[in-house]
Image 1 (cartoon, helix red, strand yellow):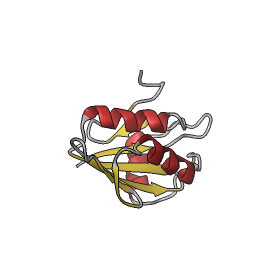
Image 2 (cartoon, one colour):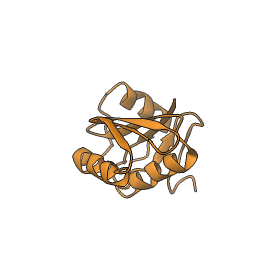
Image 3 (cartoon, helix red, strand yellow):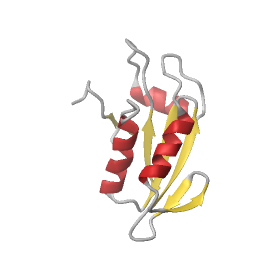
Image 4 (cartoon, one colour):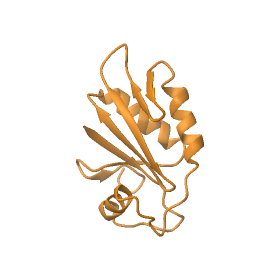
Length: 118
């Protein structure tokens, strides 16, 4: 499994990314993060991956290639667990969340891909 996590800081707030990640994975609320339009984001993922088989409400499987992913949400975050998913698919997920100003935090590296790191 490869884990991707997305959130948005409030204006002027910049916290330790790994501590934010740990709190969000534990489903804790983090002061300084925006509340996300979770339903809108999920609908956008459904649209972008409409060619994939929907396994359940928050899981998709690629029937024409490799990979599957599962989306977990909190009011402040979107976590996507990828299983055998190709890099280009993970890039598409990251690009989709970037539309909502939610840069990728990659806990495996660990790096948050936002304007402060580019």
